[in-house]
Image (cartoon, rainbow, N blue to C red; front, side, top):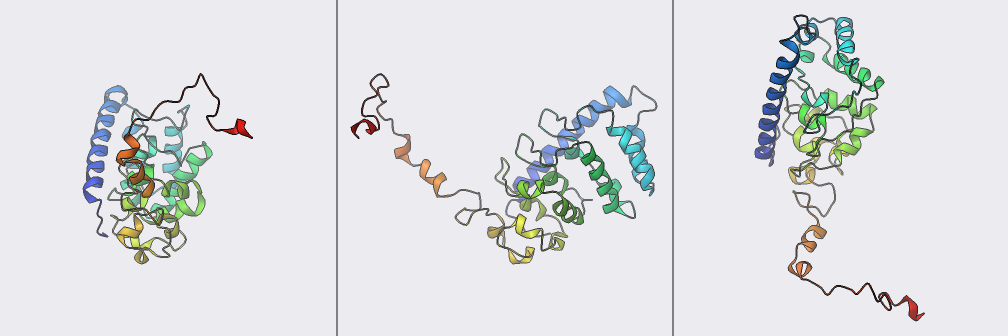
Amino acid sequence: MIPNGHDSVISAVIKDHKSRIREANRALVNTCCSQRHACIHHYVTSIICSNTPMVFTSVTYPWTSPTDNINAVDGCGNNLLFVLDPKGFVDHDQPTKLFSDLINMLLERGFNFGHLDHNGRSFLSLLCITLAFQIEWVNYLFAFFVQFRNVAQSRDSSGLQLIDYLSRHPDVHRLTKDVVPHLSPGASTFQDSNQEQRSKLLPDEDVYGRTFLHDFVRRDFILQPYAVLNLHDLQDINRYDLY
């Protein structure tokens, strides 16, 4: 794992996210699983771990197809990929193939992969900090979906970028040379970019994403009250009438 100056912030994000997932699972059990003996949620994990891709696809498709709005979100703005547990994928002998099958299936349904939740995070920021996440999935997603390049250039409400979350992954050095520049501008490999550089989207940013403009508008003189213009007498407000 690469040392990350944002570890405490990310740890708090993980703790909050796990707590919300547990609450969502309790609600699912109470409203669906406990009411139906043949509930499909009972079988999803075992099917994913069965090493049978066709069976996985045949179960996952009807699991998502009854959903009228595949981009539906919860109260936090999270869609279904925000709560995806990738453990079942890595137990398979072709985890990337299985993951890409799911992505392609969602693509056919018009899934919005560039969606950000109410905290400005994409599902990839939360997915990549799970223990079972594979870094090859980032290479796959960035190779085929332009949306992720835009997502990588944004900050969430904590001031963090996707690269800050990815930095915690033990295999982050396996990101391809085509992906790294989108995550850390100016770097050709992950090793080329130090923590300070990775945290910048613009050359004059500090590690929290603040530029000179942020400091400028916080100065005292900006907060001073000024005389309000008399909007009933518009003459000479911008002096165009002199010419």
